[in-house]
Image (cartoon, rainbow, N blue to C red):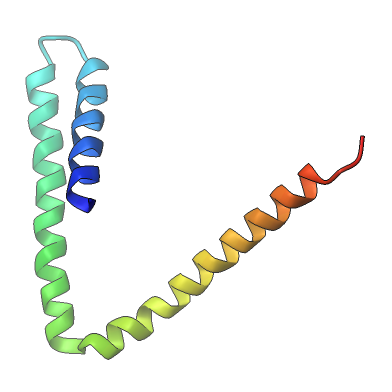
Length: 90
C-alpha cells in the first residue's frame, strides 16, 4: 500500500508541477524535479543504512520516541479543539 500511495502521490505531484510551466520548459522542469527527488531518496537510503550500522535499532527507536509523542500530542490537541467547536450550543 505504501508503494501504491507513493506512486499516486509522485505522479500527481509531477503532473501538477509540469502543468504550471510553459510547454517549452516542462521537460527541463520534470528532469530537475526527478533528479532532486530521487537524489534525496538515494541520500536518505545511504544515510539510514549508515545510521542503523553505527547506532543500532535501540538508538533509532529511542530517537523516534519524542517525535511519536509530539504527533500524539498534536492529534489529541486537534481532537480536543474539534470537539470543543462542535459542542458549542447555538
